Image (cartoon, rainbow, N blue to C red; front, side, top):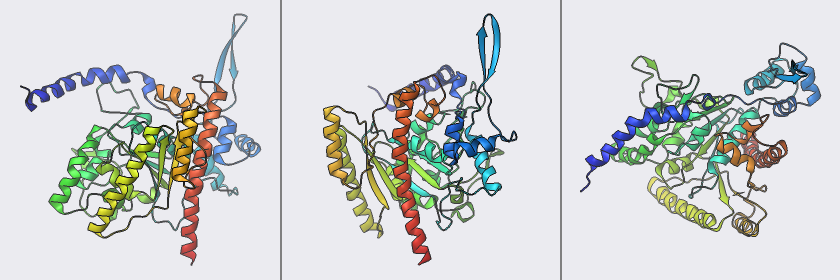
Length: 433
């Protein structure tokens, strides 16, 4: 017979191997994420100026840049050749601020309208795994940050795929490479869900993109949330929504700022962000319910495969059922600014085209026009724990292949950005009236 004490022994054995596993998997310095480098053309594009204006700007030697040196061997002689300047994410942001400070006309720093009281919250979700939720979430978050928005990425999936792609290691260990991030439970959603502690975002290597990371500890929320309702009589489905509109000084309960003499980190402030992207687990969990309630809008990635289409139907059916009951019990009405489908894993084969047509028939006008194409760039990037944006100016994949993927992402992201801007404009008109 096997009892729970026996099962505990498995856990103890894993813990004894944890140090060895983490050391072997993350000892490579490449495990530490660094800003990708962008060419002059790309940097000008993301700043939002012409190539000519950008060239005139960087003629000022005080503008920070990276100057790569290429070593060549010619007739037995080593020659160092200075290559064209490149720019990190931090340097691109400094150029934006330089333009703004010097009164250059233009909107170089994207910000939500001043009248909006909180960041725009976008949930990426579906019921089935493998729908490209994390791929869509992280590329959208990085693109928005690249374009000057202040973005918070919230990983509500205990698997922590978004977190891992942002360079966070699952646990701290003695051999942690210098400069490496690891997931501290205090920065996850768990303290909020279990003890009503405020969120504590962490900075990342990607300028303008902070995250609430995740690891397996977040799964405990599935037990702590219903326990809180039983214990304290609190509603379990809108805890995240409340947290995202609450400033530190308005937090309803006392919380610690230090533990064992160590500062626990800055508390979330809605004024620090323009857009929030929530990556959700592939299940109808309490975390998913909280993400839905917190969201102003939803993007639903649907692979062009029949099982995924059927799972999407179940996702919406369950959502309607659960929230209808919640509305009756708690007396509220949930609405979204928009809910759009996004075809993913699209290709030119017959099955994908047929299923793509079915997805169009389901969402009709509520569909992102540009499908997310099957991409070698995305696949290769994932193999290196990178995103497609991190493959720029590397030798990992061919330029034309990468450009095709980046162009595809750009069109998707522009459509989503335009939808957000439309609702910001509607809010502006309502404010004027």
